[in-house]
Image 1: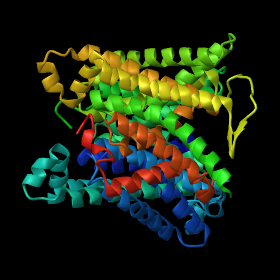
Image 2: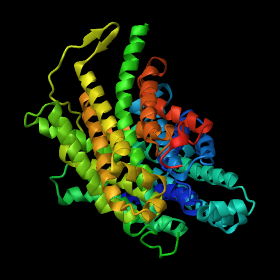
Image 3: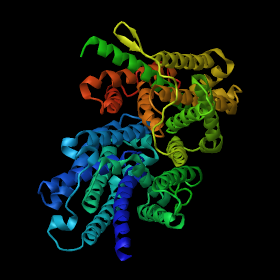
Length: 295
Length: 290
């Protein structure tokens, strides 16, 4: 049971990283990123391949964040020229395109078969310890670090500008600040966090394939962020916990109702996420914990 | 790779382009009047295609597939407006966009729960292709083209020749002015959502006739349709149709160069390049929304 809880906790922490990255983009800056899973995938494949090639784990993690940042920079520039709704759709297409590339370039990524045998965190570090425990420790450290950096960033003058961009971009421009540089920076930073999360995921699961990187994951993260209240760091953590209770809890539904097949369960999960998005937008866009008037 | 091959690719591109154009026109109508990109468009199309499949079980032919598919999609679209999007109208467009993605997931979940994930085909009689010079034409292809063109023409006739169409364009152009002139927004919205749903239904059933019926077909259609919408300047009906044709042609004609798998990515690439050069779309001059 402890082993199971620890395993769930690792996934929860990885999702928390993704939610924190998205929260920085949407919650604090108002950038709509529907392509989270694309950068998560880039991070997973980059670190998986790097460490498989014999490089140490820290190099893999660093390259994963860098690759995700690099991949988000050119599309980030697009956000300067596009209306916010267009940009959202472009990001959705971008994530699908990344998955397409991963599926097609099988010489590098193994195509639909994916990459198996990625060294776990403890194996990559040459430790004898339980890989789940090691991943848990590293991911927890990453979550704490991202929370601290985000809090620092939000309290800084930079943080004031990005929140102002979210609330009224024209006003920011009128005050002589150029929103573009700030938006691109936030976009790239948030996606670097997603890349790091992807790397940790790859070294935790040790097997990655294109099937694991579908758009549904992006909207898991959106639900987690909105539930917790966009623009609240603590909310990202709480929202992810609620999400994980649902995702993991749905596994036990089959123990209660043995007649439900796994494919039907996946339909139910998809349906509940869809329903959650609709109900949240309709009745509590400020999140379950947020108060009216909060972003 | 002879010219005959290219001509056949181009012909296929036109057909797929028309199917994309129908979905793109649906998206652009919703954007022009309800002011948000509706991500549930594709899944409404899927439901239309499956409704057509249901009617074939009772022995219906092409006309029955189309009729039932379109009616179901139009009804569903209106229902979604009444229970979801109407309540979101006074919130920022982002709320409607996110809710429409939730709706798309929900519709697909209900569909896959009951019909599974298998690809299916309409049990239509298989007809031999007729050669037209280098071009090999399936008689069903001609039907698909005819229906698509008729549906597009019907929507343009509605927009430009009828009183309700004029009101729709007025609301799209300037909602406040339209309201001040005494145009009842609710009626315009009801007609618009019926129209958007019917277009999605035509698109879905035609795609089913041309290819296969699967629960993911609508979500896969969504990306090229969005690309076409943005390409033709979002909110511009003529632009959406031309954008759809352009995307369909680009996808098919690029097959010899980039291979089959990247076909879907081509639409996105075209969109990206265009957004870099001309972010307002190709037809920004006479858009419903400026």
